[in-house]
Image 1: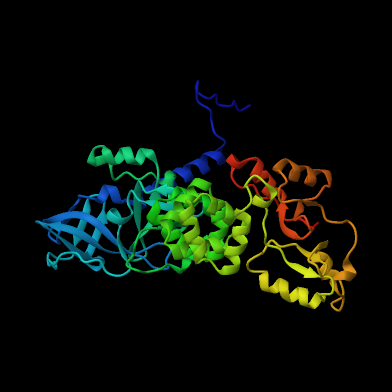
Image 2: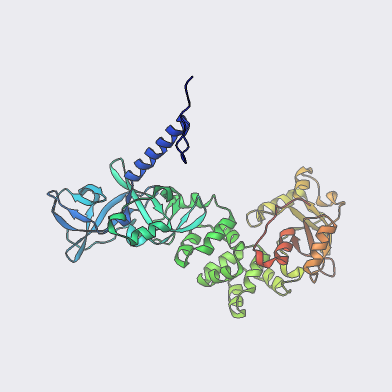
Length: 447
């Protein structure tokens, strides 16, 4: 009988298949490690001519920003005597951890001039803030990695490890050692705030489109001023407004102060009315009045009405974005009205019905309207269950009780004549009850 071999003390034998997988991973990691070149390790390395004679030291790598997930390296910045000169990538025969070797010693000794769409990797990117759109977080580039892809060297990854920072402070012989297990694929990176000479990346908008407003808000809060200005510039006003609604009040206040008056007015006008009113309350009275004066007249009037109420009362945290129609309105006219406001009120799920005097009659869900015959009038759809209402002076607790007692996800705010002023959703109540916890949003459900 064949005896099983016993493992040495403290050592566990791997199944042959697992051993093979482990060896393949080790081999792959070694191949990746050998393929990557550390920018930090390259800096200061000698640049030699075809005869092996040193002609200068490597100062930086130049990459061309374009709609390419891996920007190509277009050349080197080399210190020759007291000058920094540009060496085109075509002149580079070898680039490795020992430095660079050129085809010849003939160099253009004019000072380096940045060309449109190019960045200096060490100067412009290393140690700067970047956005990881896969991990949805702000990172800082501790090191950058280039690799030979086809015939060109390309920027392929960024290292964010603390150990990498320590490696850069250590002996020069260790600075070139890459740590591929800590590398983030450059294809997932957005370099906001790094100016590539006016070139805008179309891929940026596509990647940002995948992010939710709360995720964009987190990025805006974590980025420094230049970078978040660049991020905002990539967003359309509606998307940017959605992100601003999710920001911490103090961060939002700081951001509005950073923007130009025109930018701030555009974004505030695109926000939901209750969120915009909250943002305006954080401003000094003079700043608030100046910003309101730049808003469209109807928007400014609506916000002034909200600001007139205390922020801890129903009138202060309701949204006034309602679609109000009379009983005799045709469903075709209602549908046209909904199309007009769809872009500004994407979460709208009800229509408020009033009588000729403007008093509340009922609330009709969008689903009811869709299921009704096109030729009907709104008044034909009126019926129980009837809407739940509170007055504008109702407290947060009273609004919460109205929601819970009636098992609704929203209540209407009406004045003493029964005319609708606004609507309070469940998440508005939670935000008012728990102001320190940030914005908590529930799905918009039908009444």
